[in-house]
Length: 103
Image (cartoon, rainbow, N blue to C red; front, side, top):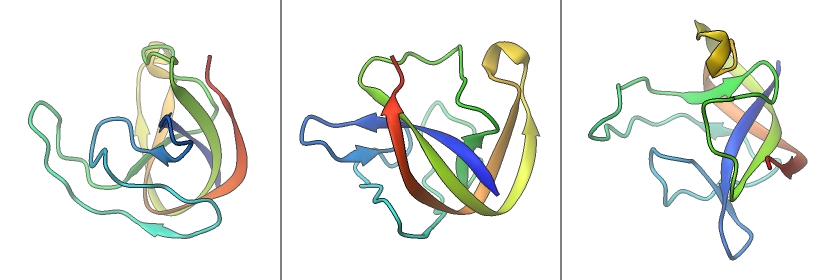
């Protein structure tokens, strides 16, 4: 299924998660399995957190990009409209290559 992922764009041009396992590099065109990395201050919800549309009004956009992704083995996770509405927590994710600045 197609979804969208907000990612951090590093100064060297690589992409990575916003908060959990921040050192990970997310590559285009490669299926990535979800891992569990408990992080203080965050609820443990193992999986790739993605949205049904590129919209997350509660998140800052500076230094971040939206990426179109394919997801597999996912659960729907209803969030308030002010947080973008429907989210998906996927066990597998692949960046399709369509990436644009979130700002």
